[in-house]
Length: 125
Image (tube, rainbow, N blue to C red; front, side, top):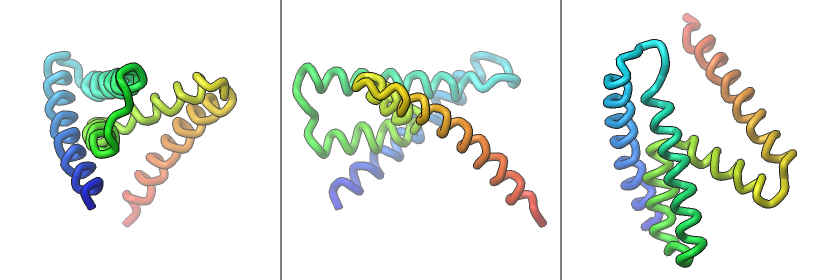
């Protein structure tokens, strides 16, 4: 139950951060033709998950509660793209290049198809 609460609290904070930063960045860019806000959030989320993973490798692992709050909650609410990036890099680090490429291809292809299918089904009368 504690982990569920920590993930929820972190997720709430992460989602608020995502919305706020993406909105500010998009306004500052002044371009409605490219999702600069989403790009910014995704890149920052990837940086932070990499930093936290590297930091904990050198300075010792995070407590399980802190890991749930920061990784599943805060960064999960901020962007799940960070988890995708981290998992893909981890596959590359252990030499599973084929699995990494498959992950990228499947996530992109199936994800885009799922968006398309959802749009089609959602527009049905």
